[in-house]
Image (cartoon, rainbow, N blue to C red; front, top):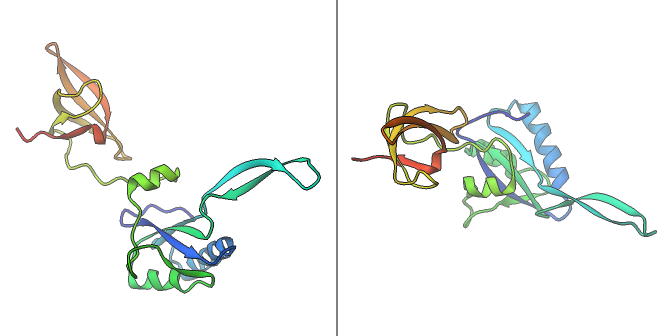
Length: 179
């Protein structure tokens, strides 16, 4: 069901206690029935595996919700998608200031461990002059040789001791060189 949509962002939906799975299943059925998979691309309930003991003292492994009463939805926000999600039985509304849904930041999504975090496209292109701002090569300048498809890594040609050396870096480690 996971689709890539660059306009889609992660939002948090508050639910009645114990309704997380019902909201998720209902939303997935509506997405399939109405053909909204390009608008609402993913629905998740973050869980962790916990080992404990049952009432007889025997070892037991079970899933525990990390955020009870919340469902995470990756969607392209519009009036129609807002209404679809908001009107699911068991959903009480989006998390955000007032009545405005607030998308999660990329850092928040990464900390949740969700896959397919879509990073904003870098502000530079192949051939752009960039300055390395963090890591062991901090302070060096170079030319972008390649931007990897996931927009998380970039290959920069850096002159070290008079020799051009390709260096693979995170996009966050470089910035456009204004000089």
